[in-house]
Length: 76
Length: 535
Image (cartoon, rainbow over all chains, first blue to last red; front, side):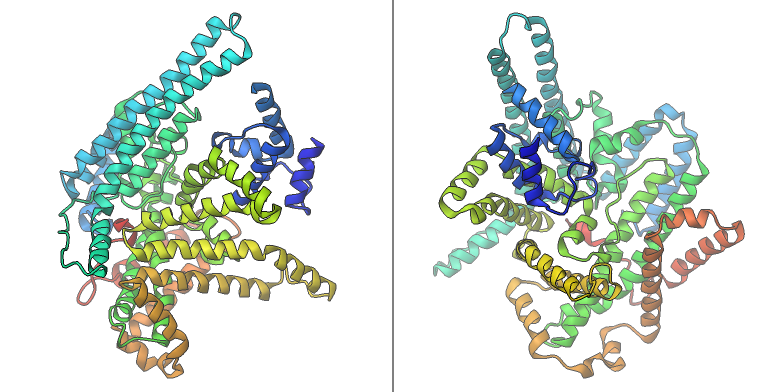
């Protein structure tokens, strides 16, 4: 989780990612951020996030994103 | 049948009546019949194309769903016998089957769209190349049919198919219901591009007559007609005078025409969408909003989150993301980070995907270089503003340090909004003039032929509009602006609904009379086709 929070902080230092659960709904993360984020996550966690995984439910909070990573790690 | 024709008013009038008279379980069937009739009234032969799209999508979606059910059943049955790798391999095989199915239907439907919409554009380009190389040979243009709204219904259907492929929801097992989703007449000609999971529930469910739905829907229709007939169809005369006579109207007039066109396009497109949403709302059907006060955007990125929202989100979900995160693009990203450095490398895949999306957005709007350059122009502005973001942050921090709080400052917001409107209006010039070189030339004249005297009242009266028309336009646009301002604090219609009955009816009748008396009909006017119908 700490690695993920670091990646997120690099993108938007001004956002409290531990609390925010409307990252997509409130357009805090835009499409450019999401693609950059996926590229970083794929590298750091050795998972493959595909286009079908890009949903507001998966990207609205650091927690949901971490759950997605764990799910993908489990599948791999 | 134009939304602005008397036939359309009669059509929806009869439909509304029948919709609430027929047994509720037949309401959606009535809508399907009405949608096909609406489409057939434009041209019977259009039905062939929409049927091909519907039937192909139906079978493809069912086939894709079958792979999901087979996969689930097989894994359930053989769970204990299979290890993790075997399960993974089995899922990969099923996914490949879905992928082949999707690819086939994408190829078929995009192929139809490409042949009908872009063949003559390709021929024009080939002829240009032949002339350039000195050849006297020219290819003949083909007389191809372009079914009304083909870009809209094709993209809406492909969105549905991709969602089924991704397992977002199951395939629609009723062919007639899918046919209604594809052909639902209010949104057939100019969108919004709906998602199946957003539209289908209210489209197929049974509706009882509800006063709020009817009054809200009729209000929305009336408001759409106001924007279209009173403003857009009036201001278009001034726009056409300027853009069709580029030798006569240059410099200052280009600037005037550019702003006039911004108002025209906004009132034309949002007016059409208001009518679409209103017609659906009378029948209790919820259609996705396509605009959120786009002219109040502070930057171009925000503008595209508020203008033609359903198209933007379609391109993001079904083109931008799949391209950005596909295997080759991720590999390219890794390679570029390694060889070009972290900063440039991480931008390569995002920027390439962005270029593809905006090229596609441009060509989706029309088979011409004007639209391609317009799309790529948007892309360039978005990418530049993306690069400038750290500079903006630094600028704000420095200003804060000096005690100047720009963020939240009203004057600064007005500057940002004006900048965005002007920028978008400049890009829309490509939509106005007949070719790209002429557009650049006319844009240039704004800087070389500026003449303040052209902004005098007498010059405006040369544009085919009289003083009365300008008064109507100014008051009309002020009303649109006021409504947008009020909308910021919540639904205008809810506010009207809370007013005393006499004021409410006064407002409705007032607006109705305004449309009736001031709508652009009669000598010198022609209730024209909606701009987005042509896409």
